[in-house]
Amino acid sequence: MSRVGYALEPKKVDTFIQPSFLHYAKQHSIDLIQIDLTIPLSQQGPFHCILHKLHTQSWKNQLQEFSTKHPNTVIIDPPELIDRLHNRITMLESVTQLQLSIQNENATVEIPNQVVVEEPISFDLGSIEEHSLRFPLIAKPLEANGTVDSHNLFLVFDRDGVKSLDNNPMVLQEFVNHGGVIFKIYVAGKQFKCVKRKSLNDISQEKLKTIKGSVPFSQISNLGEGDGGGSSAVDKAEMPPQSLVSELARVLRERLGLNLFNVDVIRDGKNPGRYLVIDINYFPGYAKLPSYEEFFTNFLMDVVQQPKSV
Ligand SMILES: Nc1ncnc2c1ncn2[C@@H]1O[C@H](COP(=O)(O)OP(=O)(O)OP(=O)(O)O)[C@@H](O)[C@H]1O
Ligand SMILES: O=P(O)(O)O[C@H]1[C@H](O)[C@@H](O)[C@H](OP(=O)(O)O)[C@@H](OP(=O)(O)O)[C@H]1O
Ligand SMILES: [Mg+2]
Ligand SMILES: [Mg+2]
Image 1 (cartoon, helix red, strand yellow):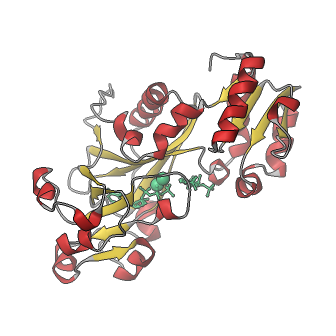
Image 2 (image 1 turned 60 degrees about the horizontal axis):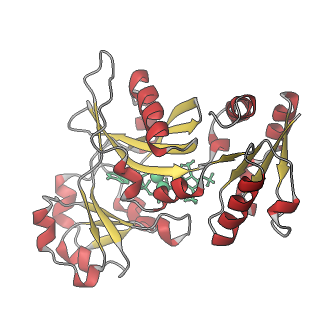
């Protein structure tokens, strides 16, 4: 039996550590063991591998100490590399200037045009022109550290909308119409899977003439059905080419130096060969994937069979 320790928030334990997963992993000689956060990590183990999604300095110190004492334990993943996903600018840096070699596909992968606003109240609106940003924009807290606040997004329709934002560092990103469907590529080491989900509806030119200021994300669904969107749009949407999905998963895994993440990708409604990465999340909700038990166990088997080289 290989021993895999996990250190996760209680909510994540509830969703991710399902009995079906524990059972499937055990059948494949993987024992998943909950790390007791009330006891120093150094007093626990041994572990072939440690999975974690905790970001306190105390946890990072414990991991560092454990790793020094037990260099053969694989830490999935290094905290300093995970930290790059906690800032919405550094998160997307690995995507810029991606030269994907996608066979037989006329496709590009980019990120939306965006700018950081440190203080919305005193923001120099001239920067909007300077960065050639076009309304509507989507405003996202710069910090993406898993807190409720980090998911408080706004649609911004004009300059007054920028001024009305909460006075925290934000990223202003161009909203790209994409037919109301988002593609989520889940990566776990060499394993990857792309699924489609409902996303924000397109914003029509008509609507743009009538809506002013900014609208919090929680109210965006009240803007009406829009053009496209809805669950039938999801059913009808064509998946991105498999070669794009596999290349994106492979290249990002290499560039980020991470094993566990998902990538949110949209397809430009005006240019179906243009794909945009809008978000990358560390250790996402794998349990939402069909047969996640097998998907994740395959990953763990790769890790324990080839320590330190996944
Ligand atoms: N640039 C964009 N253009 C169009 N739609 C966007 C854009 N950015 C985000 N969205 C929409 O807003 C949603 C939330 O944005 P994003 O994924 O960046 O936020 P998040 O808080 O990090 O979400 P989560 O981590 O839960 O996936 C996306 O799933 C998509 O529907
Ligand atoms: O709350 P933070 O730490 O930010 O992480 C969330 C991610 O941002 C989301 O992307 C995850 O949902 P998806 O797996 O549907 O992307 C979401 O999955 P979950 O709610 O199933 O745990 C979380 O992992
Ligand atoms: Mg997202
Ligand atoms: Mg996110």
